[in-house]
Image (tube, rainbow, N blue to C red):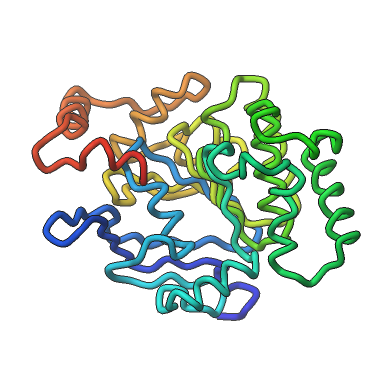
Length: 292
């Protein structure tokens, strides 16, 4: 396979367990998928399905129990802590967290947080960093005057645009967005989704993680449906919406008010899903929702 046609990211047969010995939980099971250069891929699933753990695994924050993660020609899953740190500092893969208030330093201005990745690189002068920071702010429709404010002084939409700009400042090849619009009101949600659509047109590969299929429908080429740590369906987003095959996918499509589907759940499928979604003695605890 040529370098041009090879996937940018390839996750192959990955398992992830979390927890201490004797209390380890099987969070991700047999996960295999690829993201091509410039492709936008949605990862959809309910809270606790393993979405955030998948993102953390790609970044080396959560380790694999089995399988490989490759980025280009690099086998990331074989890296030690120092190699992971070096890789993350390249900025080739960037992560936009769900809650900007947790990812932005509350004691530093938005401009300081936005420019931090460039300062860590140490390859640009102060003037160059300031110029690049201002350019990125304008690029994400953020008034440069807001860069002197602290995160608590910004609106939710403004903070999220700072986070997206911070993810872009190193000119990454892949941007992972974890529920980037779930905490926003309708107006800010539309603005951020429009921004992500603009990024998609520039050729940056995106992984858009969400529990809401409607949010990712318009900006993804392909969608992966994650249910209880397993991929139950994958395909072009239009196909996932128009002709979902798995009962859980059909439930997601049916629950999105702006989406329609020709398929409907049978009574037996509804009963099975209702049973599976109820807590059981072997179900992951509620605290799992904080990490997956």
